[in-house]
Length: 314
Image 1: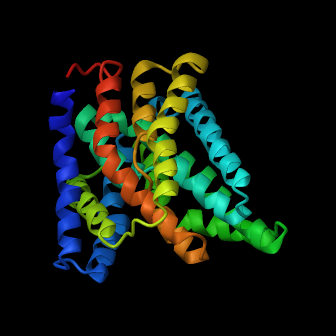
Image 2: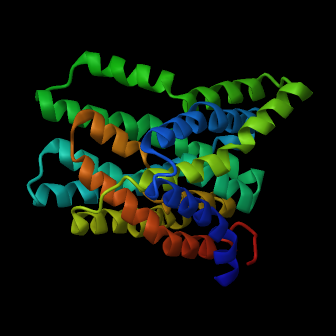
């Protein structure tokens, strides 16, 4: 456990450095926003494209892996939704809470961390998790908020969802990279070097941006933030583990990677969605802050647990 902590500590130290920079105003909110934009549209996109373009398509798709992650995620999503209904929350707020309970920071934290800890073999499973989160659950929250507001489902929302997916740089980079791999086109050396240099900025940039953005988050609604953090950091990886290991019987390495992805803290993009639609941004902010802080212990514990499955002995 201590050996794993020493491996994960540098990642959280970078988050802590970003938090200090944001808290002391050395990095303003505007600077954080631009850094996040650089990472999201350039560095992380370059990393994902390069990773995807070098994958063997036959080894990427795993129906059992997707099924296990999707089923485990839906179980926790439904639990969070049921608790929200018991508390008599409206549909929009319940949808935002359910999103916090299951959508982790697989892009900014999971992909760079797991790729460095477990090697390039981690990239395929993490990309499948990212695709599931972006295509299924990012679409679901928009649908539920729209139904909650308008009382009905309109065709225009499908267009909004479609455009959102097409414009998402992670989806675009993933799709183009897999297409490149499918056509078996070798990446020219100058292009590969360019992507490698730009993509190398993704890990420190993303972790620093996470920390800097946390500095502006509030700690209101502590009980709700604690409940949502428990869902995300404990219930979600537990549910995914049950489906991966006992129901779908996913091969050990893939199971280990999706369990680790499920243990990631609440994703920052949920706050942007909540703020955009004006639905409970304060409780999302608190859930992100709490879950990221608690994940220093919980994520380390999960990685220590799954390491033997990934054939890595601490």
